[in-house]
Image 1 (cartoon, rainbow, N blue to C red):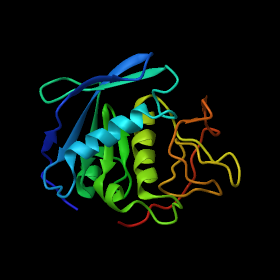
Image 2: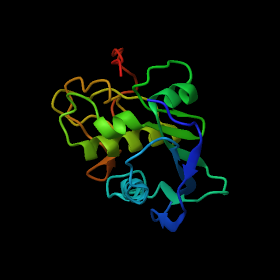
Image 3: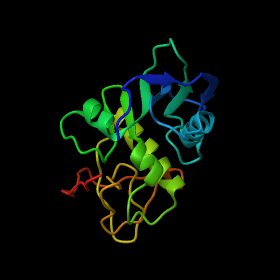
Image 4: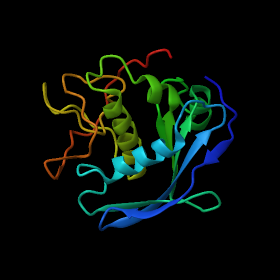
Length: 193
């Protein structure tokens, strides 16, 4: 629940992810006190998610490159404890959700480890969703609604809080097209962690 609020920044990976578009650099930072996370595997997972065929870099609008300690990134992807999530994310402390605030993409380690109930897809899918959803906010995207029962949920839908008839879907693109719903968000209650 509570970490040190100090961070280990993972080493850089020089490869550019994506073939065209605006280049954004990012760091991956893990809060002190979080145990049992394979840091190399985490960094590889994040880069693979960004570079996936249906990910944010797939259609030539964005490129990403992971930078290391001492460098100034365009955004910082942070894996933090629930209490630190509340400190960083501010406005609505809940210890449950993740957030994006400014240039910080904040992933709640409790969701990373446990996912959410009734998601209906593997934990790997949920982790891809977390990364893509919060990064989508950093790319300027707002929340979206389920387009209809049985359809994939847009990545910018708050799938952590409910699917509203949609099925879990972790990606910004579907069949090489930006997949989205109408702008808006549901008034879902936030579970207690």
